[in-house]
Image (cartoon, rainbow, N blue to C red):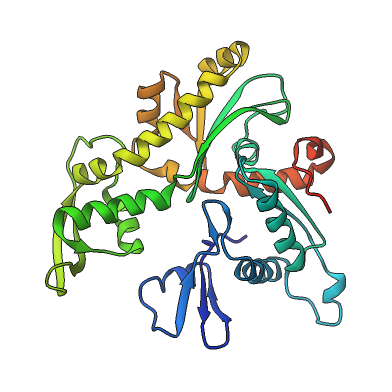
Length: 317
């Protein structure tokens, strides 16, 4: 129904929201001083409560339809929001409160790895080990799920945004070229790979020379991008290994047979499944429609709330 990045453009003069989602993302690095483009959610948690509330209000009204103002107080949909497994109770409370103030009639939270496994179609209700590695924009979480709950998990606050930062830093250090987030993401999508590619690819990159301050064009290769991504990828590998090391033997046997499923936008990086298979010895594969797994799982959890409720965090009133 809707797929938007958590990016908001704000007019500073009166603190009004001028764009949300893709429209705001396209403004990154291109706005005048009077407009600020912000990411109100960082590393999976709220960085700016007021902006997050405004963004959620916009999304709820857009998806549910903005009813007649006279009936709006009565039209308050139930909302299921995914959060990283390792968030604190304070962070959970902030997400819950933001959703309620944005117009939700009820707000429930679900750990992202559980939602990802559910959305990927894994049999999470059975007494078998199902391993999911959810590679989002701000965090990567690896978890083993069984009987509608998370058995063991590990997480690291590294995801697609950190991959982009690694490319930005690499280009700056090697070529003295300053590039923005959008350009870094285009490089990652265009020629990025977790392992060296058989056929080397190249891409023209435009930015500003750090020394002269003038516009400059360079050519970067896929092998350079792979090199730039190694540090954050090693952190992802360590997180997956840590989860496997904590997994009970019987569930570990299931995982060897079933493999691990990768979800989240960052799982679409070329060869990341092969890298994890190579480094852990456990077969890894990317879920169908990986970018939507968490959202689909959250929706299914809301539909089956009575079954799922014992596995969901309790947010104190």
